[in-house]
Amino acid sequence: MGLLDRIGLVIRSNLNDMVSKAEDPEKILEQTMIDMQEDLVQLRQAVASAIASQRRTEQQWKQAQVEADNWQQRAQLAVSKGDDNLAREALMRKKTHADNAGVLKAQLDQQVAQVEMLRKNLLGLESKIAEAKTKKDMLKARISAAKASEQIANMTGKINTSSAASAFDRMEEKVLLAEARSQGLIEASGDSLENQFAALESGSDVDGELAAMKAQLLGPAPATGAPQIAAATQPVPTTPVDAELEDLRSKLDSL
Image 1 (cartoon, rainbow, N blue to C red):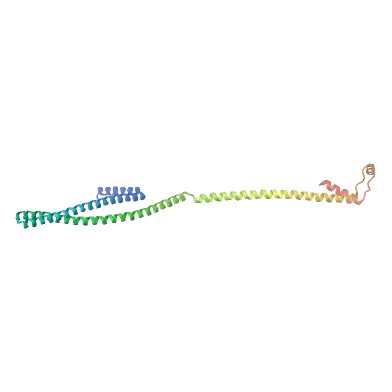
Image 2 (cartoon, rainbow, N blue to C red; image 1 turned 180 degrees about the horizontal axis):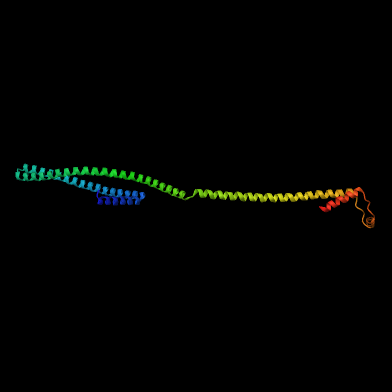
């Protein structure tokens, strides 16, 4: 292969590649349907023209036959009148019209066959167009579905699933931490209240027990007024109970 042939091959291959990439299936289908419709219009016009020509030829053929028959009758009339020259002239005219009728008949037969063929082609093209239209609609639906699938695939490909999963894991961890912190605060608050109430209840028991012990050891409280003062001036006898009471008081004061 020569250099020019190789260059031409490269150019053609590049052009074919450019054309292939530029082809839009939907546009190609629509243009194909337009071309087929134009062919159908032209074929219908051809059929109509052929039918009109056939009818015109048929009329001419019938007229030639009528003229031939007329000259035949005139020739017979001339013979009956004994005018051979006139009869001969009539027969010549008859032959001319008869020959013309024969030519027209052959032409008419050809036109009939041609019209029949055009009609079959017309029916075939109409059938192909109907089939092509159905196929075009189906292909367009498949093209739309393919484009939608491609868009979904592109969108899915752009999503970083690992990053998204990591983000969800981090957020879940933060939520769990916040829930644990909240639960801890609730439990701490509950423990503080429980401890405070327990202390109050414990303090009440101790105070009551202390009061009961004092009442048991000291007896009823002395009357108010002078006797109390006098009693205060009297010396207090020292007994083992008193010593135990003083020891208890010192312990209470040290608390």
